[in-house]
Length: 377
Image (cartoon, rainbow, N blue to C red):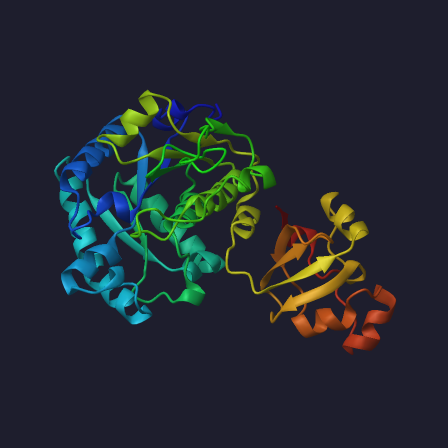
């Protein structure tokens, strides 16, 4: 049975495995201290879900916010990369201890997993993370996952835990992701604007839906806004995973929101095979190629990307990197593992196979990106 309503997210028969993302602004108060009463209520809900037969993964922000308070750092610990990394190092201990103690109060064991973008972008490391998550959940453990901000830099980090939650859901083989936010869900315009309407359900993220997003984070503590949540929804929906946004500011937020059917549910759109779902969720792309209209049409019919259809190349990539494929209008339509470096792509762009050898100095490969290593977005 497919997830079609918010209430299905807490039904173990429909959603055996659930990822719940908790942001900094919900977990940590303006004084830099944990919101203990709110957290107690949330953990009680998690315990109820586990008792009912669901397996739950928590993706938790809060390390930098907690560490900043302990170190007395200015600007929320984000005035420099060094400050953020130091705050994360201190705060991660407090965050892990917090979840461990609260879950232990319900007879549950917590496990800490710290990951970087590279851990889920590299195929081998991704599979290792997937195996660890599966083993923990099978043992009845509640994994608590966070980005390893103590070593991550701007170039190699997710930057928000919304997209991290979607990638963790892929790795964990989860059925749904529940993002706890400071708003009820996705509105058709800024929720502060007159006449703004909450969307109860979204059947596929497209340009119209993206135009409704606001990229800011209202709290100042977090790093994600509605734009990052839509990006997370796109990652999830291609992997056959539903994603919901609910208001997490209230007591017992899951029961409160789902009981009132208040939130936005993004329906799964397709179920890519595991490797293609991993490819489609890749975030750290090294470059891109732009293709002409004929090539774009062929790709949508399932063809491989050939050099003859390429009109422009951007970035500095090497063979085996994941790059984006844009159509003539500049819209990203696919991404995949490229068979050539950026200089080689520039050399053979627009050329048919018969003349590529003279440019390359060796016999050309069958495709720039083979269809088996490419995902349409």
